[in-house]
Image 1 (cartoon, rainbow, N blue to C red):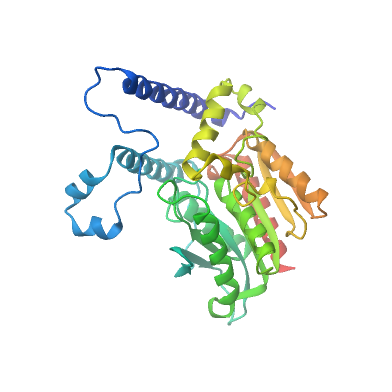
Image 2: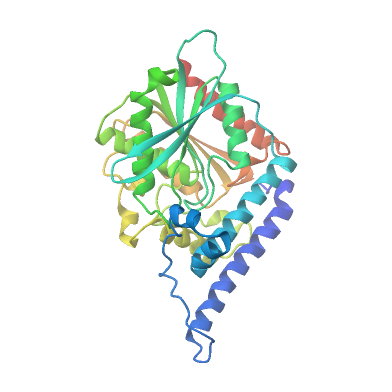
Length: 369
């Protein structure tokens, strides 16, 4: 199906961005090789985590900024730009979320940073417990968060329309924190949600997981960890455009060829994501990093998987649905035609995005059964 006209200008901008990123990397490498370059060049593998929060608070803002290396400063700029872009998207092509009651919780994670969990509570009569879903945002493991405007708005709308509590996990970003930190934080949040269900008004017999893009990877990984450890009774997993194989073996390059984006740019992008998230390339073969590569997918919760026609990750979603069905898991995969990876954001301008929202809501309503 032809790409929806809504995406035409966005595609032009995205294509230019990918070319500019690739050319920037080439220039950096050439500068590093040029014998007359000014000053030392910091190796690409050298970025360390940003200065600890305590240090940042102790120093004046200017000095704290100066203490960051060039890679950390570039990441900070990129994240600020991504947040500004997200804010604009919500105001121009998104849908604001309704007012709902929110509670914030800090969950301890053994040997790792604690993780913030925000619960969006639907309105209820009395104190009857409600179904809940543990939710993971997207952003290639390196940007995003539960405070991003489109993410927050989507959680609010889904909470109200599905009448389900959304427990949003504000997992740590890479490369400051690498795999398996995010998976362990996600599992700790799940374990906490079951243990604290009565306190937060949630029915422990009706809990699922939800994730989009990188968050879909984490949601799928958490179901595997749960099966291998506590075996909490998860009722459903809803995975939107998930990346479930960081080796790239199931990436569908046909989607990008149709958009006239060269293969090397698409491959470069996936490798960049994996390199940022994983401590070692071999980690991509571990099942909690790439859930599709698990030795077994038996005893996992029923799955609803949503993919997009013009998205190289559509192959991941297709393959994961097939792997689940082979293992006897009730799984469906729906591909939205004529749209791209970030379709769910555009509910204020794109009919397919509104249908996407309705389908996710329908999947979450299964928790009421």
